[in-house]
Image: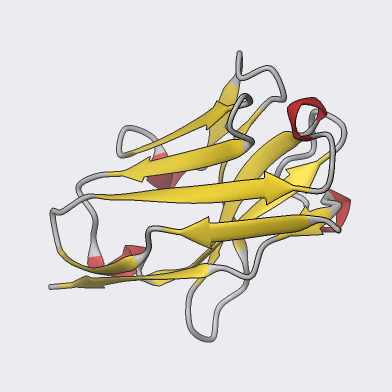
Length: 124
């Protein structure tokens, strides 16, 4: 049974930091690219960051560059999203997702597995 379980969300003040984790099981984690997406209330789900299966390349959407860092530990079957200098507009449910092939990270339809999400709320 495939599972992606996000954790680490919560309420934080603007300028603060959070570290999200996504624990994977039930599939060959170290052969999948992993990504983080987010979805604000009433908004489309949007790409945040991706990391290749080997961890040697990362990709970020513009709003995440310089503030967010994606990483993975294949020995622990876990992907992380370190977020700093958080802003109220970062408030959203954050999802992790697994993709078998590299590339096309922005396209939600290309992902095989999704987690249930973790809420991040940034107060001003």
